Length: 318
Image (cartoon, rainbow, N blue to C red; front, side, top):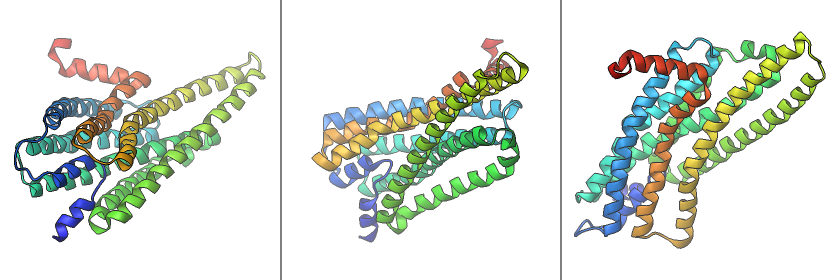
């Protein structure tokens, strides 16, 4: 009885799975829309899982080969790729398994087990991604504020400490589901607000500082100092653009899920709503497949390295 109550209180990355487990007796056939939605989402996530695994492995291999990126920045993107890889390796296969088991008439206990595992794995992977993207935005603020002192401050050792803290806090947050679901939800809401707020403030500082620096560069004239500063600003803007695109992609993929959650609180739960929200969960997981594409598009060094890796391992490309 105690375990059942705990399972019913859990509502995080896959709340619709929990709601469906709780609301169905598994005696008879589920509604047609639920069946269709579960099949479509199972297929979508099966394909996306493969794309996510291949894409993030390529990114990790290319980052290892690339030497022109700053070591601290490389560590941040590597950790982000690892968390995305975790989505493809663990979270999506479990999500597909839960959809298939529900369709095949699994017991509520089995369904709840899938939900708990998905929540733990999803919270860790998603939480790490959100925290790292926030760290990247702060890292870009330090780069434009400290300028020449940036590399001395943002060392690889300090960056690794921050990354360890991100993984630690996400793991503690995930385990909190079993201790206090209410406290877990509170920390989740506060964490999202803090990360989104800090990232937003960081990018506001970045763009205001960039405008000021560009106006200063224009006053230098056609001398060597001006060209050197202009080059630095141009390179910095590229790194900011990459971080901003990745962050915007994450928000775009999460927004439908958050809006659906708000609608659920207002209008309540229905079988149709559950089927629709499964698509919003799939959209969240799709973000892990989009990130490697964004890296290749926005970071030239990574793009060239990925091309070399594909040519090396793909016989048809030789």
